Image (cartoon, rainbow, N blue to C red; front, side, top):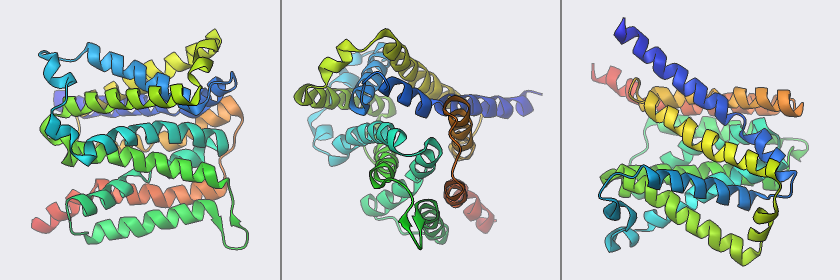
Length: 304
């Protein structure tokens, strides 16, 4: 009984996390209605997450909080923090310019970006499955946003922001695989959020937007706290817990339920119906991600 219930426990945890993540789009639009822009949303979300991570930081804390010189010297150290900002900021901007469903569909090209990054950083040789996934994913993006007769169906900036968000998350993943995360996962986790928070504060102060955050009404802060505590800390914690019961590949496949769940929340809370072209293109992108997630199984079968 224990062996059969544990995997299902992991499935429910991942589904619960994606159910929470699916509310990101409507909540961001709610917060923005009070004049709080994408940069401030990103700033608040990352800053609160950083404080929570530092509060649970194991001892000795100094070794995890203070990076070494050789760690800072590596480009991936900074690219990962910038990627974390790009992931959050790009999503926030895209949610405000294009539909919630299309935003999530384009964001889920992240594994494809990570695959390309691995080819460049580690000189990995592309496999047949990876090339097939790349072609399928690119086809999905084209089907979702491009009409042969009319050209782009949606706002170009919104599309670019959604793709940049996926690419940013890929940089975060690459640091975990090839950068500091390979040596110390928790330190990489803390450093990414800590420096991303610093960069966001500098950008907000220099742009003069930080004053808007202090003038925001209580309702906006409720939305911001929901994002920082629920869609960030709680949801990611649920996925981390789920990885004790299942592989990361299976968790990645199940986490794609965020796409239809986000469409569901957008319909319930915003009355937004997903575009047929976005759904059609999203099917191709989902197939590409599933191929990448299950790629090790193909080689396991070949080895048998």
